[in-house]
Image (cartoon, rainbow, N blue to C red; front, side):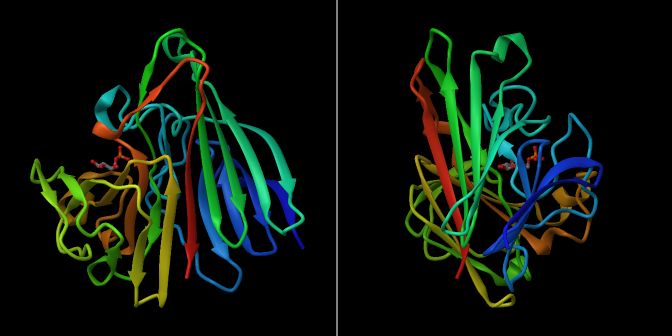
Length: 275
Ligand code: BG6
């Protein structure tokens, strides 16, 4: 009933799970969940038809792991973890019917070697992602990170995101700070970092589903859709694809950075489910 196999997926080595509750594919490149399909349902994740599958490049879709920095806090943008292979350290079939995959990553760059990460991906009725960071250096490190999850939606202009009502956010398109009023709807480029620890829900009447994103140890939720002009500028994103996707990212970004103390692990968790 549950099977775990190593496969080649678009030229990348990947772990394929045919589970009791869901099927999933996770590439070693970036420990990147590229597909999560609850049994009898549709994929919760989106991936671009223009996605490039090469070492040194992030995949445009699925769940890029943004670590150990978010955005342009350092170079390259959105960190090192999404660009190269992680090590698969274990897989476990739980009695409950879920499958857990464990990955680890240590940057090869000498200046970042004091940091390491472990990612556990549990594929069950829900998709659970647990990212543990460890600082083996001698000084505090200001960690920013995200599960940059690309969700598949029927039409972004018809979905609503709830759970962030009244939250303050950094509007990265307008370059100012605002407070959310009511549910989030989409009619133009959206790039916002909400200060929130709450669950967010994507309400998608077109697909007849609600995707819940629950989380812990994450002080920010990034909501992103590039819309028309920005999509056109991205080589790995189809010009007509922006209505099909929406990123709702479990994050510790900007002022919600975490102080990673030497020897003290920090685990950020995201639990994704369709209702
Ligand atoms: C989002 C950022 O998290 O990621 C956006 O808020 C950015 O500003 C987007 O454009 C995509 O980033 P990238 O590096 O994957 O093209």
